[in-house]
Length: 553
Image 1 (cartoon, rainbow, N blue to C red):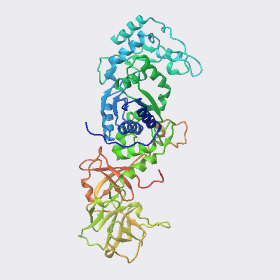
Image 2 (image 1 turned 120 degrees about the vertical axis):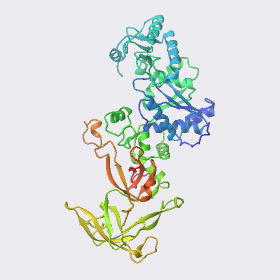
Image 3 (image 1 turned 90 degrees about the vertical axis):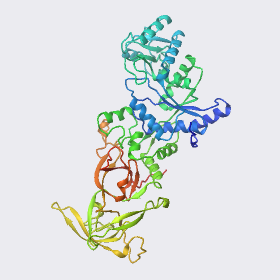
Image 4 (image 1 turned 30 degrees about the vertical axis):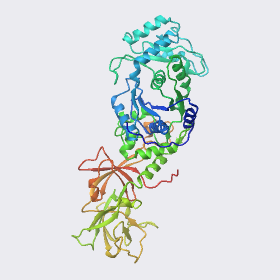
């Protein structure tokens, strides 16, 4: 096995527990696990848990397992298994063991029989609605099932018949026999097994009864020797039942469960059910749509694993829920790319400029640095000729005060090139400006040391003769957190402007760009070559993040 790279995690209450457990000898080796259900693609919230579990174990020379909690065959699929494995590996983590809950189905069945023989589990014939009604409320105790006092022999026989496939879906369940008046509702005879006649992605048609997650999870942890079972706060109330299962099923290893606050981000959906709804109703371009908070969507948009890991470390591990500003994630991708990304020029809404005093057949190569903050990235050559493209909004016929770009009679600097002055323009039949006529000053070439006069505006451009056509996909948040309609449904709060597609041009040297290559386009932001829609004939760029933000870490 390859040696793991170890990163020291920031101090938090779970790390302090681990330190104390090792110091006192309560555990000799830290074993954690990341246990997703393969019923969808991982999202940024899972990334927090992945980083916590893997980095915590790595720091203390422990182990981390990747385990698929596949106890619900109706919703789970091999597609999700493979996507989860790819996402964890892409984030930079290597699991020590790869397991499935379904690997332990036989052992779980045996442990359920242990409970039955101890008089701590029984087969119930009630319907799901009857069980729900009899459960009681937070202020009222539940009511015992009429089948609660079946004999051990009858329960064993019925449970074996459940496994043999004699009953229909929902016809019978196995329940724990604990306390229907417990103040903790999770102790009111929770369901341990149900009948489900469905094909399982891993075990095929071997089983027609499946354990509930709350029963399966502690047994899995115990089998694998997990020492610190880390989960989110919604499982805090289930911890007593977790401990009950470990104890009463007589598991040889005793893991401990610890809860932390899940990740919530502004303008972001963190529910796999809702994300699946977006995909199923084609509101997005699949699970890897760049607007999605899925790890595959973030990867396609252009986020890096380093940025996501740094984000996860910065937000930390706490015991109380809170919401993180989405701008914080943007900050970390900017920080990661500012020294890595080649800085180039792209024109997203082109306006042609004819430099009337430039020789018609001349093409010269101008030198430009690839990243002014990282000289090691070297320089590149940019073609320049009589006709170029600039941005539509870099020209105004009647500009307001303090507008320093092109307008009739004004002079600006072309990035890496010359000063040009606007003398005239051409409009189409609708009155839209479609072409500028400018002159250039040969003495003002960038890098020449010219000091004769100064201009206040610098604009970017691409050479028209060699420009490479490109599609740019510009993104805004998918969800409107500040919707004025409090009664709006989830789908009604989608941002209609979350995707804007424009056609433009990039520099000639971008012809060699490959999927997932990342660039900083002057004045626009960081972009990623889209791996799904880019072809040999068409470059497609996804906006990762704009250049500036008011957010401060």
